[in-house]
Length: 94
Image (cartoon, rainbow, N blue to C red; front, side):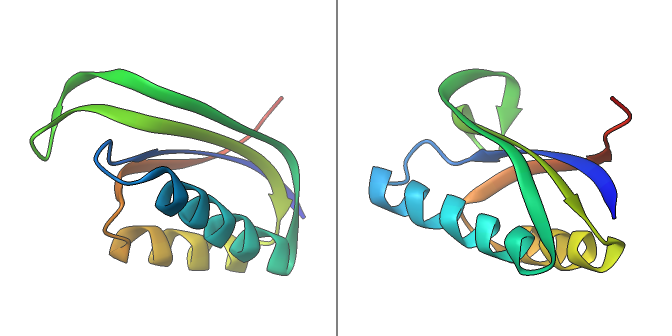
């Protein structure tokens, strides 16, 4: 298993319950074949530049250990999720 870090931004106009549901959905995908070591919902922050007509977003940072197949599935789901406006999955070297 490898160490990964994912940062994703959820649209600011999404209700709090929907934000929680999206976070739980992504946690479930990671937990299906890996383990979450750190999870941090950082809350609503101002974006550095406008993305899809949004100036703010709800930031979520997750560190986890998983096989590459889990990362592939997580990326596939994030691409098609309407509530996610941007995401980045990286290998965690620390």
